[in-house]
Amino acid sequence: MTANTRDAPVPNAFDAVYASCARRAFGPMTMGGLAHRGATTPSATATGGAMTTFAASSANEASAGVKFAKDVFAGTCGGITVTLLGHPFDTVKVLLQTQSTKNPVYSGAVDAASKVIKSEGVAGLYRGVQSPLAGQMFFRATLFFAYARAKEFVGVSPDDPLSYCKAGGLAWLAGTFFESPIDLYKSQWQCQLIKAKADPNYKSPYASVGDVVKESWKHNGIRGPYQAFSATLARNLPAGAVYFGVFENTKNAFAARNEDGKATNLQIIASGGIGGFFYWSLFYPIDVIKSALMTDSVVPAQRKYSGFLDAAGKLYAGGGVRAFYRGLVPCLLRASPANAGMLFCVDFVRRAID
View (cartoon, rainbow, N blue to C red):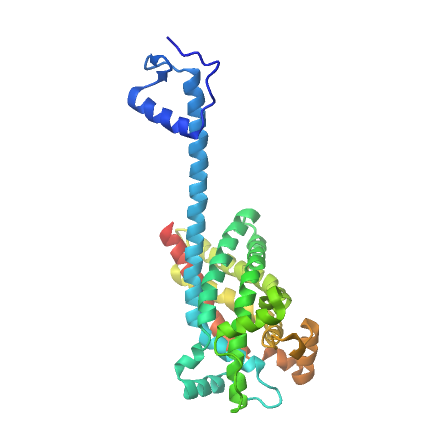
């Protein structure tokens, strides 16, 4: 005897799981008892369809969650790597970029690094590292997750070299919202070292990076962390497109020459170093303007620059074209090893956990 299915309720996910377990234990079932092993009832058909939909939906959600976790973990590892490798160079770069043009404290990159080490030891080159270390972990996790999603959205292909540039630009667009506050507070804190060196009687108004954050929010509210945001975005959009575009296309070029069609670890490192070099060398003048705006006072009434163009004009008036290339040497010395290490780390970790 078969069941009357006219008034049977539509099975939900729980019913589907329950019915599936029952079928496995007892074979196909009906409302009146056991059916023949080969029989299929309307209820069983409906239940099977609901179960299939439920299982597919769960699998998709689990897959998306796993991809998210992998991208975030790989990006976090990359953030730690780039900070530990690059922060000393970044400290010297900021010191040279923001020192007075009329009364410079340092004659060059080597002089700046030597004086910092002499007065504070190697730890001086890592001054303010707490903010970028924590921030870079979060920022790079966000950046590489955004890049993975951007590649899916754009539909990147080795046959379309510009597709990687498009995905890179989109990723850095998202990443700038997280990078800009991190860079601001790091630069503000590093700037205290410069002022203390220029004037032995100078007393810093900040005891920690936390004090900088509080002061910024006190005078500017939610806009505080985004001081110089437009300059950061002006650098990141084109530079990010070039950065990922050069890295991916160089890696693909290496891979095409190998028998297994894959780039070796050394080739991935080289690709990352080349990508980092182009990122900084082509757009360095914009970074100088960004640094000037970020190291300006967090108190609006005390600022030297009213905006991007005003900062560019005053920098040119004070030092000509050379003003836009101060600190370039330590920046380029940092660019290749730091970015090579970061991109290799992200690529290696992602392959290891896939």
